[in-house]
Image (cartoon, rainbow, N blue to C red):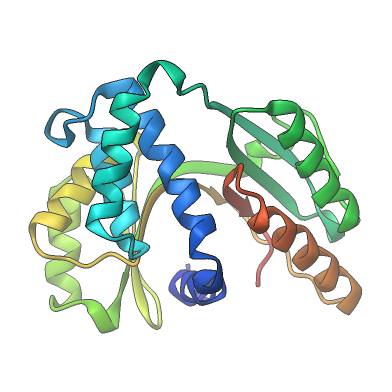
Length: 242
């Protein structure tokens, strides 16, 4: 794990996105809508909704905005028709990219994702073309500056709750879980008062690709920036060693 500071990347992403909070709130608002449709509007009985609320709080979404989103979704249950679609493809230098989207117009989303890849010199591939290079895991990042526990106490809290692994980075701790154990581990940490910089089920690369050419780095950043600007895009995962 060393050499890949997840927290530094997340912090950079959040700072970059501070100017576009509306985009983050749109993304999370859609996740709230889908979670409510699938499991109801009571977080106590809907673990998926609890996870989305935790993600919203990690992104500084105000409580009243979260509550409004839940109420709106509960009232619009029959009108929520978002579809999860995952795209896989290649960026410059053989990098692998996975894009998770939540959309009410798959033709628009497909065109936008293809456009992002094309403009950055990449191409969208078939389902499964790169996902075999990743492992689906729950990933929780805790910034050292926000953590009141020592590393051993945090590690034991996470492992006792069902986490698979615990790694210490320069500026953060990374906790990984099986996807099905993610909610239980996140809730145990939340119950212990742990502040999480990020908590989500994601795809973690098995190996990383280093780009040395200036043009390749410019191109992959172009792909990632265009995807980041798209409201339909929920999550982008790649194996570029930034």
